[in-house]
Length: 225
Image (cartoon, rainbow, N blue to C red; front, side, top):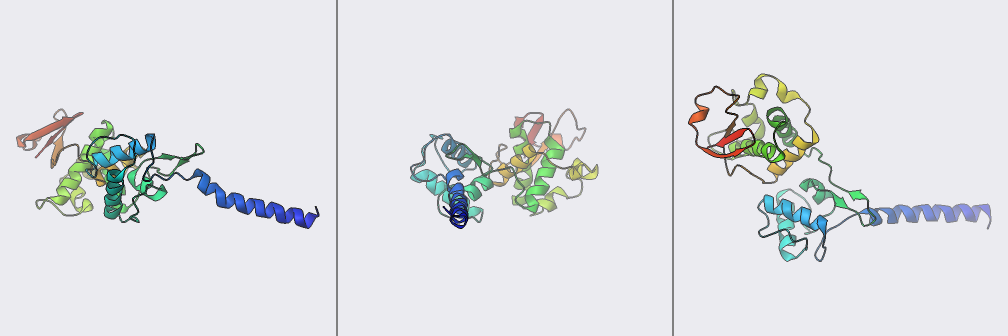
């Protein structure tokens, strides 16, 4: 083989590998898929209220419909399949067929997500993961309530609403757990069941907050309406 032919063959092989490599690594869940990746996605969809029932690890029509609803709400291409973009929006990691991990870092997806993650980190970084999601959910419940500002920034920066704003800790960089917790809340998980307030009874002397009706306790925080 001449040098020219050898180089041409090498170039063709490299180009073919470049084309095939993403296909080999990319993990896509769709109708008929089964396994732990499907279970992870189903658990998220159940948490967020898109899917009813149990996470059985089988990607059937109900799971596909739930994924489509999630995609529609989050401005994604609505195809009922969980590829890299949908997985990243869900905050889950899919395992590629060749064993490589694909998609889903706990990345920041928007300015609102970043601010909410900072609030979670400042207010609840010592709490359980569920407790951190719960704090984020309270912010979102306030956004949805007519009694509070109708934006995440408006709620967080409302005068006197959160001590982390007045003491400056809201400006600390959130860790990956706070980022994931904020994303879970944004996607619909509300461990509080609609609560508008939370407080640590061991850390506050505020008498008014203690007059609110407590609905649930998660970690060190009481969640109330």
